[in-house]
Amino acid sequence: MTDHAQPLVFPADFLWGAATAAYQIEGAAGEDGRTPSIWDTFSRTPGKVRNGDTGDIATDHYHRFREDIALMAELGLPAYRFSIAWPRVRPGGSGPANKAGLDFYDRLVDGLLEHGITPVATLYHWDLPQELEDAGGWTDRSTARRFAEYAALVAGRLGDRVGAWTTLNEPWCSAFLGYGSGVHAPGRTDPAAALAAHHHLLFAHGLAVGALRAELPAGARVSLTLNLAAVRPRSDDPADREAARRIDGLANRIFLDPVFHARYPADVLADTAGVTDWSFVRDGDLAEIARPVDALGINYYTPTVVAADDPADPAPRQDGHGGERSPWPADQGIRFLPADGERTAMGWPVDADGLYELLTRLRDDLPGLPLLITENGAAYDDYSDPSGAVRDPERIAYLRAHLTAVHRAIAAGAPVRGYFVWSLLDNFEWAYGYGKRFGIVHVDFASQRRTPKDSARWYAEVVRTGELRPAGPPA
Ligand code: FCB
Image (cartoon, rainbow, N blue to C red; front, side, top):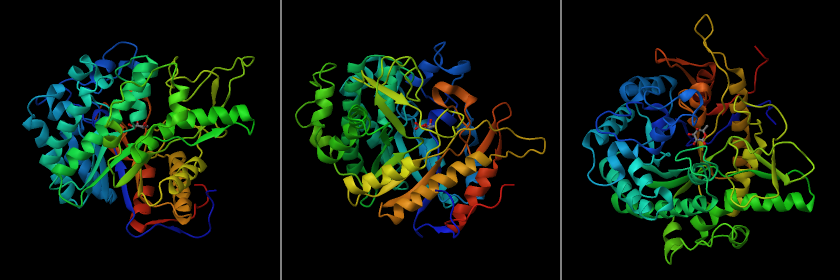
């Protein structure tokens, strides 16, 4: 559904931007008092990240942030979503603040504002201070308290200039890839730990919402970003539908019910009873978790297709997240299937209808709650051609299809207020290292030269006009 004869016009106040995350771009891992996070430890552990890549240098954004801001200004991006590195501003995770670390974000925010770019800050994009992991990490309740303290500290410094805040990015990945399948830091593989981490992440979110509200001026907006799944059963067969119910529980309702209704879904508690007794949930936690937020951030890449497992079918189980173990606690009997169609360099099927399905579901399930697409984009094997240009028609097609889906969802009444492309720059793509390029700006990692790809120019035009024009004939 990407063909349209007329331009698709987005609302005048729609917030357009690009997103990044601290560990993926900053580098300067040991500078100015920053201490290691779980991703430093993980990426330095042989075999964990492809090619032995680490975030030690990344895109060197810590030193080149002015150039990157100028690039955003040149592209006319109205907003920038970035994350703050906890071990940079509070080394070790507790104790005194690190002035040099806070100063960096201060300069970043001032630079953005000087160029008229709205800063949107995420407090946790996966870089837990290693000392806190050593003390139990997200399986330990006290980590949530440390997170709320850190949130207050950052808000105290930047809250006079940053009006939009996100507590956590994709806690599903932190809990289930970090503590379940182990393909993300800290690399633990224990389903019970994954569920404890899940709860403590949500508890941390709730405590941080309280801490942010206490610190920020009235009118500041506080949210949470989730990678909710567009879950589809392979068929209408009751066994496939049952598989979809279970994964919908573990991907979606395990977040939405506590955050918006102060309860865990009864079916998820029952499905996971063989893994944990959930005794880490204490009285009062759910009320804390359900503190009202002003918006919900959604990261979307590809749908999730599930079926009842067929023991006779030798095809490997796959869910697009890599690794030998499943990230999903209690997923026995469930098979993950690739959706049909073309794939990105991640192997993720391109399926914009999934985004429409998700947005209209949220329209119905959370009436009136403003939604922001905080990440959407695609990796392709981009290279700079002899003329120095980076041609990425596949990415343009991907973005066009997904923006069309967003437009369709808005027309159907979904309150989507903004869109952030993932990512501004090619960067450290977690366990895939530098091999997967998601940027609209190409980065030559040897020289650190930035080159806007064709998609950056295309996106700049969409942002400038607020319209998606019909696709021209193929070049
Ligand atoms: C999301 C992450 C982001 C990036 C994209 C491709 O899960 O939030 O950092 O890696 O995937």
